Image 1 (tube, rainbow, N blue to C red):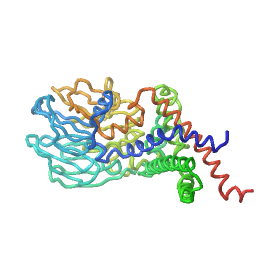
Image 2: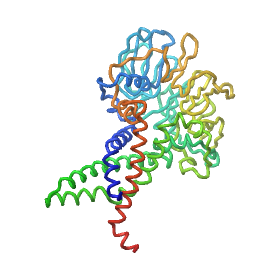
Image 3: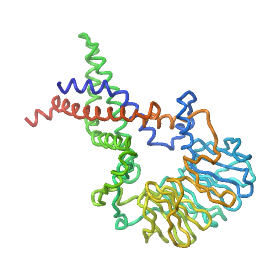
Image 4: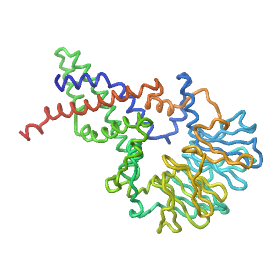
Length: 450
């Protein structure tokens, strides 16, 4: 079979699945785009409604009135005054964190921080308008916010004035940990595994856009060639779409496409390969540049009156002045949540733990990657996507984001759909190989080499 025929068969077989994966992946890269959560669908397979549980990020119960509950997530802030029997939306913003001091409630959103008094109804913009606030903690009269995982902002709650903006300048000699293959695969696939800032994410976006164009132009070329009958206008159209389909931009996307392809296959079977991928350690010397910087990897920040704590994918770092740092706790700090004098760390692929009285202790019994700590009847409960006994709003629809998520991982269709994704990935690999061969045979490069 010629490379031309193999290329055509692979494209026609896997094209639709590749487009679905590319479009959904492109949008999933940007979960802070509000329209992804405001557009909803009601007519979907019934098993997808459970995805709504994953959209909630924080939970708060009024210490003075336990009938008053506030929960928030990607679809907004929802409140109940009857212990969660009924909820109503009180703020239409993407929410990452809800916390309070002795008299007010603060909400960290993709559009700054909102605030309201315990007994009032309406939310008011408090600070950092138009900023994506991904973490929020309060210690006494200090509010510690993280802007888009890049900046740590300190606000005085007594004066409501911003005191400082700090950056994570952890020296590279403290960023020398090895990581598991499991962590590396996820970082690469989610657009945070190569370079600092948003550059890794933009590379993934670029690969997704090129893939979409390649498939669409490939289908158009197949249709035109199949139906051409000495038509000059059709011939011109073919030449035009060939230039779009095969060019230097497509070649530059090969490596990031291969990364997405291979990491996607591994993530499809993460449960079965979990032991293997966690057992393989990648030496720090061989890791991409981002692992020796992590300046845009602040997943949480806290202050205890004396020290600041910064959580990233390696663990927790302590500093007093943002010049001198100390590595104090190992393991991905997914969430950092302060409750009075205790700092709770929710681990991602690592242990949950607490910091109390300058001592770190593994937190036994807490769910993996819990999203919040709830003070209820003077007891601590953990809020997570799998919480079954905590009242949250129920929806008769799912968001566009959840729909795209289900299409991307195949759960929209069936549990076995991951194998269809795998087949499409293998065929995409064939498309890359045969496409590169055809480009080489048709290009001037071959003539210059020969």
